[in-house]
Length: 166
Image (cartoon, rainbow, N blue to C red; front, side, top):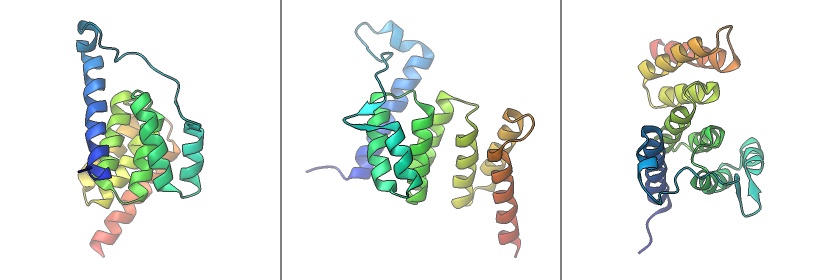
């Protein structure tokens, strides 16, 4: 019996998270034969990261998820790929998966402005204003003179508050 696709994706995202944690903590270097540090080109078959971005921009989110999921399996340290994978899942209203992948993007690159901005919006979508505000504060630190992600999330939080009070 085959596992449902969303369970398979969550399983692989857990494997990628464990690999990343092992590398960051230095455990991977202590394991002979563990080839966790090898980074391969960000290509799956003929589909590339750029193809996935085009799919996202054209609204083909399921196609983008398939491409990006294969890409992050091959290169688990590509913050932009995780950010795009998160965004596509967010657009499909797969909020749990989106949050997992945004966290992975931020584990790889803690100053990734796009990931902070969009994870803030994902938290708003599930009603977690506190976490959205946390990521707005992080953006305020990362974007010293402001950036698009900061202003977009700030506006989304303002609209969320108006809708909650109204």
